[in-house]
Length: 408
Image (cartoon, rainbow, N blue to C red; front, side, top):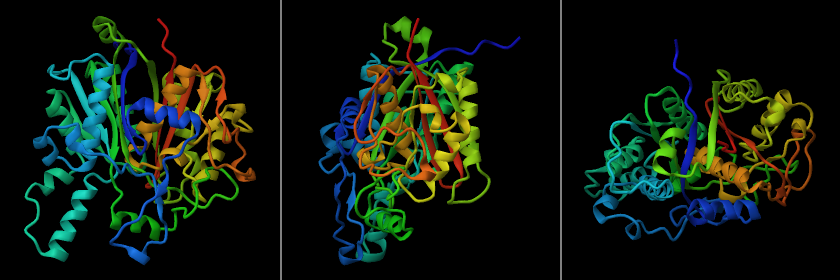
């Protein structure tokens, strides 16, 4: 006889975004429709830089939050993850000096890993011809953030990275959910981190012709691309029994996860893959389409992504996505690639907690190919008990998470 699936709750959220530190800081900006997108110039690119905007955290000083030895051993993306993890564990009422032991897993997604270290190494080796950083490899490896969190809090359970482009964080959270549900772990520290705003990385995105030079307008007829961002989102998830035993407040319940592969095109999404991921997530959560109250869309603002996601939503929920409010918050915090699913889940969880659907800012005109029930430009206050968060990635990788209001 199989063991029953255990209820999993979120007890802590931490975030670093272009707005600064704090999950509440991100949520307040998303709810109020304030954008962190601003001019972002690279001296190395000069006139070679065509797109000049991004959502970058300019005033982050790692030494203000982490010991100098830790700072030296971490790329910027790992530094973001550690600072966000400190916030998440503090909210979860877990002392930061308490060993988490064998029953705590750490899974952190990233699309690139140590991009800043890679950039610095290339400049050192091929331009200045200096010796370089002997710690470059452990700094740049994609699992560095997960390993640093494991070491910081002495988490001796499973620890690894998931690197699946823009679905990385959602897959990391979903995998952690499955581990805790099944009994492989009692608690998991999960999320994603990305710090990819380097000159060469930015120019590479620009060359793909997917970046907007003006403003990101998801699902709007006149959209012309996405805007890059950086940051980290880390969550503490654990069994309801564990949270109750510690006297921790369950912020929401994480209840569903679905992931699929298009197995079709490397860059152009297939609506069938996203559709299947949403259906799997709802079945996993045990909810019907009529029980979804809000959808945080992947919504990049690119020519191909938005119609594909809109079609998938229509297939699952019906015309106008069944009247469910849908928003993309990427014009607010930027597309943080491997961290996107974590930042956007934090927003979705707060939408439940405050009964508020955040807006899709910059939206101007409906596209017949994106006929969904948008939340355009202004937040909507309404009852939200269950929310869905979508992440779809290059490579045709789809990940969907579902959360609901916690009730005893």
